[in-house]
Image (cartoon, rainbow, N blue to C red; front, side, top):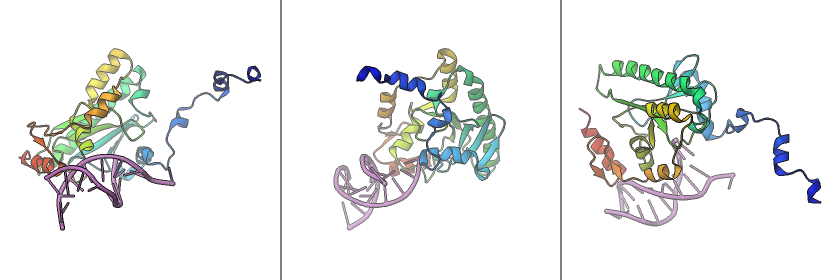
Length: 210
DNA sequence: GTTCTAGAAC
DNA sequence: GTTCTAGAAC
């Protein structure tokens, strides 16, 4: 008889209190790759009490780093105003590390301009801020999705994320709009020329290297 | 997130 | 015929 059964809310209430770790993807799943990388000293570029910086395993530009919190935070949806100091720190550290690497690299070439930000809908669990040089010259840059994820509004500037968090106490992402942005036609981020295929765009990007 | 590959596009 | 993209992957 139905009335003798606990309601679904009652069942939920009887469960152990939510533990953030229980919501992490299984360690062997690809989407947990960054949690593994966090502990990999070989990939590490910088680490302090709050965050760790690594080189992206599949860089989409000549310099492509990831800044991650040492403590597990799934993504921007889990962020609230208590995380403001962390996000500000991650941006500061990202800039410092990028400028250090760029200064060293500029002895041989020039690709000093960076952007700092988050993908609106990341594939990998564990919050990560991209630090990416704006040459976009890399063998790992292959698809339209790659391109649009870094050059359209799908790329959320870290400073804007911080401002939004400060203003609203959380980060809102328009999922439907973001998915559509990934299908945008290929357009050069520097001169707005349009291209029909990735190989053509990639060849064009070389002309912006001076 | 990447790899692989069928078949669309050229 | 070759290049290129796009969707499945248990």
